[in-house]
Amino acid sequence: MFSFARDLRYALRQLRKSPGYTLVAIATLALGIGANTAIFLLTYSIILRSLPVPHPSELVRYRFANGNREIDFSYLLYESLRAHQTATTGVFAAFDTDSPLQNSQGPATTVHAELATGSIFRVLELRPWLGRGFPESAGERGQPLQPEALLSYDFWRTHFNADPHILGRALALGRNHTAITVVGVLPPGFDGIAPESRIDLLLPLSFERVLYGKFAMIDQAGAFWLTVIGRLKPGQTLTSASSALAASATLISNEVTHSTKSSMRISLAAAIGSTWNPAAPENPTFALSTASLCSPSKRSARS
Image (cartoon, rainbow, N blue to C red; front, side, top):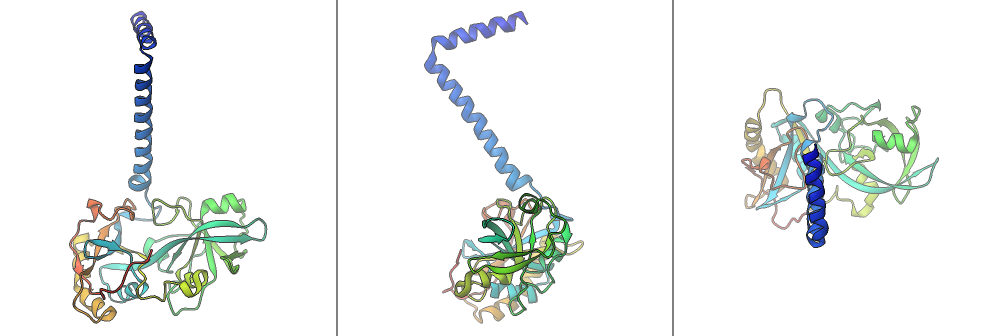
């Protein structure tokens, strides 16, 4: 102990003799600690965080690419994929956006909402903490609009004081103050399908038409804006699912494009329990064989 104290006093004397060196050493330590903290937080949010749903390792993400560039799905492409794919037990499409929300019991606020097809509950095996989810057909184009919403657990607690009587509450969403009804509360920890964002509301996908009017992308064949997720069948591997997808690619191609000349293709990527990062398509996890999918070369991605 005496030796340690003596060494410490000697070190302090030396540091006082060289203030420049001392500042460089302190700055280096601060940067190192800060960088390691940032790396840990990023790793946690992208790699370690797992969706609070049953068997998350069975989830897969459908990928759509034009040449070497990965883009999102159009609704037309999602419709064809949903109708003809046999690679997974089912698929759902989702999209994130921000919108003003007016609560009769408080001031207006901007919320981050996830819009999804009703199949999100079956594919994720997602059980609301309170209330119910959407019907299976909710959010699909051509179906009656379901003006319903589920609140995230954190949003329910912070903005509604965890009111157990929240079901049936009317809210006004968007610039046109469209009335929506709260039908449920999402389970704790479920903040949406993207690791880097936290949602406040879950809405039917077709509500995008209400929010954006004539600029809605759901009716635009050339708008690529959707993330598509599926779940592997029991006992199925990613390799066998990719083979099944390849078998249906031609049928999807004919229905969507009626063309055979295209560099566009579709494939599956392992979600590995929500450890995938949609913002990093070049992640080695996604290095899988692809099945050709034809699409008109004039189409462009729209974010």
